[in-house]
Image 1 (cartoon, rainbow, N blue to C red):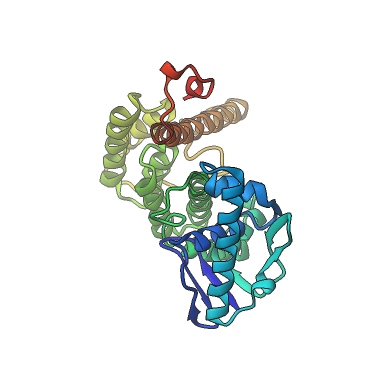
Image 2 (cartoon, one colour):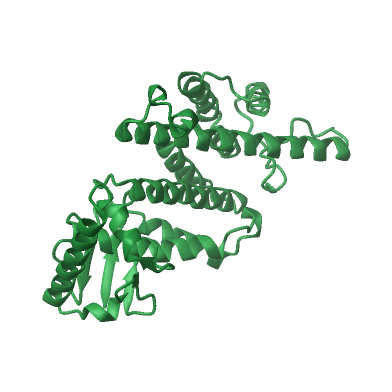
Length: 326
């Protein structure tokens, strides 16, 4: 069986024999690209353009043939048959999805897809375990050390997918009273993206619920500092309201647990609000949470596009349409 890891530095083995050239050399990178796009079949011209687009078409096609031949040799050296894993003819090339293989990215994506659209409060224990197993596969960002454009796009996509899995696990364990595990997942998110205000607020609530009032207050101060330094904004109203509620709480009193979080609210501003007002407040909080998450993800996408702009050499002075969107 061919076993491939694309998270972290990347590695490939066939029946415990390492695959030469993987993933740093062109044949290995070509296999990585086909694995990441395993649901598609590519015209040879397209593959040649992706990897050798700065060469004339005939030269790029020749370089693609050479890379496929070298990949054939690498698989044979490890004991695998080329045709078992790659489907190819004079026009198309694709990875054989029904082949005997194990791919970490595939398992990771399948777990995320199985829970897509399922609210955190509706996750089953089995689904949570599957998400946790998927998270353990993420041993680093996709193909660390590779900076091809096609890799950067998938790296960002999988990174965001990982954060979504961590959020689901954080909320799942919060709802089941596993505050220590929920805090660990939340802290893990913030190590990847410290600007996620909703996560800061959730950790404030978790610390408060666990009786650690000091940690809850300190979390707010870290949140406010990070938002100011990174985004130039102040915390949202509900974050400040939670902070003020914690301040008003006597230090020796452990707060009673709120209603199980519905995915829309972490804590209510007042237990005396009418039901209609409470529902409206929760909806408002949910919308602000969505906006905060979107702003954070836009921040990362702008950074990625900025890096691509610098690498590609586009500028407004060149008058290109692409330069105007950065």
